[in-house]
Image 1 (tube, rainbow, N blue to C red):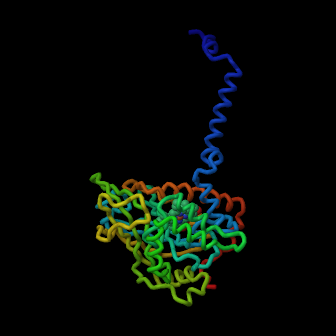
Image 2 (tube, protein in one colour):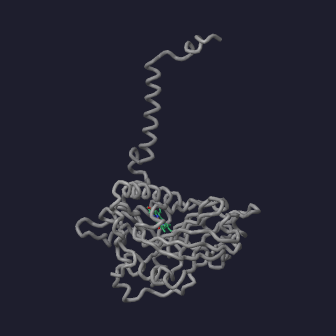
Image 3 (cartoon, rainbow, N blue to C red):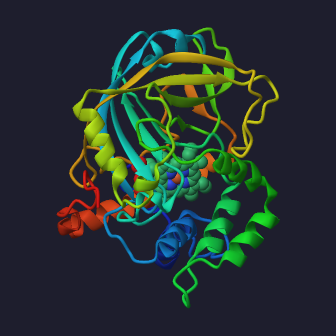
Length: 364
Ligand code: HEM
């Protein structure tokens, strides 16, 4: 073969080459447009969910999470007692200490909402494992979730979007949503029977979604987890109901007297227990493993704390833990990523959005 034969073998049709390049560019643009939901406005996508979360919140709140916007950062560690190794080979369950960065919050898209705006509190955690892996989880103070599917989550948001005439959700629309979706019943029943806690420190926090745990022997079981407080539960008081920011102030006061502790309880499913439905609890006789103690030592405002720029995506798990077939998990991952992208972009373009901490430690 001579040097000159190589160019002779390439196609000479310049318009064909341009058309091929154009086709590649169009395909890529089409891919982006599809992913962004522009070609299929009826498809349930992360932008549709996050835009609706923003609509429910009313006013825009640049730089803040699109859900669970009101919160504060905490730091501490997890002391594993080694019991979790029975179900998972994740390094976090080996006996020893793992540093933790966390965030307490209240659901909703308004970072200045009163603490009483929701009966639910939340705790999100990032465990920094010593082998470099991370375990991230977002937990709520209810053992079940209100809805089974991402579509129902979206329909619930639509029903809760404020009516422009009154600035408030239309109670008839919400009632119609609950009547049409009986899966929401266990959540409503649980909330009615359990008044909100008087403190972030005396609530239990549940991972709710099922995960798949695999141990060193290769055995895989479905597991749910909860952080159960050492501080005894007490219901919200009448005086607290009149205060806007009592949760952060109360946590600060308690931390001044020493660290706060929760036990990580792993609940192991029996074969056949539902893993794809967060509205259903497993039977109460399932095995519970106390895997160790979460110790929270410090709190800071979310505007300046280490949790601010963390996306507590529940599908970020170490080897030995894997997501289940619960359809909420993938929807959560996509929505959290978009919320994170929007809020971190806003804080980069407008650093002033975080100059005045909204809630931390104030009682009024
Ligand atoms: C389809 C269902 C769900 C959607 C679309 C959704 C959406 C969101 C979004 C967009 C955020 C803000 C994320 C960020 O900016 O970092 C968020 C936060 C949060 N969600 Fe969900 N969520 C869903 C289900 C759940 C469930 C089942 C739980 C409880 C197990 C949960 C617990 C939390 C917690 C704890 C946070 C706050 C995390 C933090 O403090 O940064 N969510 N959610």
